[in-house]
Image (tube, rainbow, N blue to C red; front, side):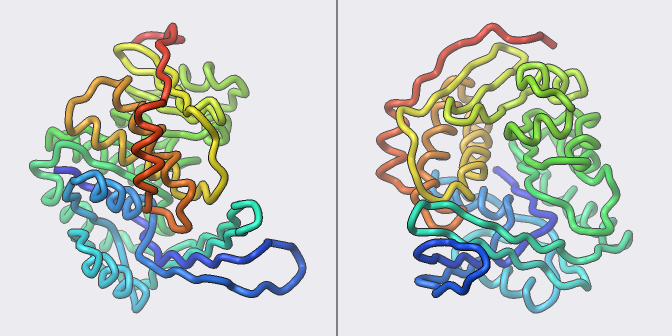
Length: 310
């Protein structure tokens, strides 16, 4: 069983426009509205892969009810905890001209200490029997800085592997809990470590507690450094489109591979293929099956000399 956690769930609104231009009005050519947040997007991709993930997290207010109802109508098993505040909305404006996406992220509800304690209790019961727990996205206002560290430790006590996809102070505070996998992009690597060199940044993150780091290498694909080796997985071609959901698709592939106890080269091949398959899709949490089928046969995986060993 795979559990995905979205502490700052959202109602994702996507608007497609012909061309995105500053300081002018735009006609919306298509609009999409659905339950979102990174962990929820991961769960949708896991469902595409044949898993039956459980989604947990925090929601509140009328927007929170829309999120819950949207998950239920799409067949995703939701085990959410209600808070008094209103869940956030995100707005993504996608240009059909060049595929660029501009994203506006709400902060989310203010969560009280009592609400957080109730969630931790609920979460501890939810992850019993889980093989992998995915912790994704930002944290809403009011949560303690070590919120993800707490959840990582609870999952480890339950015998589950953890995959963490967050950034900034939330990532920094979580490292001491020893997440099994983290998935930063290049900007997050530099922000958290202060290292301009990505290899040095990965080394630093592992020194601080991350067991495996799967980092974006830009157009070169993904670089993974694990306790058992290091690899670079490269896509056969670059695709234009909406990259918003690529990272979530990557995390879904990692979680799926860990649950299956797959070898890291195979996990990375799937991660690059699924990431690419998300790019042609207008909304995060979706993948193009034809792109996925093609790319998973063509992704190149090369073994690297690891920068350090743990």
